Image (cartoon, rainbow, N blue to C red):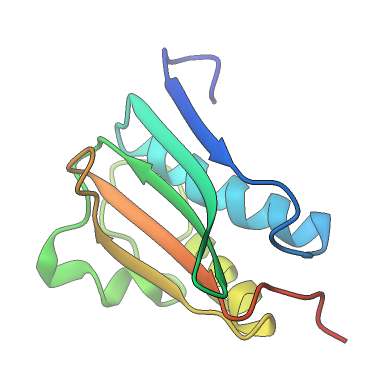
Length: 131
């Protein structure tokens, strides 16, 4: 999917801020980045930084974002903001479930930098692998 379009990647990844199972991190980033590409973003920023004692993982894009009236709905399993693109509407729910296992929460906002979607996960007290 990523080779079919010219995407500009912008990354800012601080080292050693979170201890998350690599499979979980792959699932989180895979779903968020796939959505960004699928829904029209040409610039995608992936960042991991520290805010106070928390680590914040964020994926932002310059796509159309999610309409205000659909934002809560698309976080639910099986719900999609756009039915034109192929998918099942489970990606954001999977990301939410993984985040919750780490005591974190998936949040959506409009990207101030790009105007599209910005999904973030705040790991309180820097994340540790759940037992």
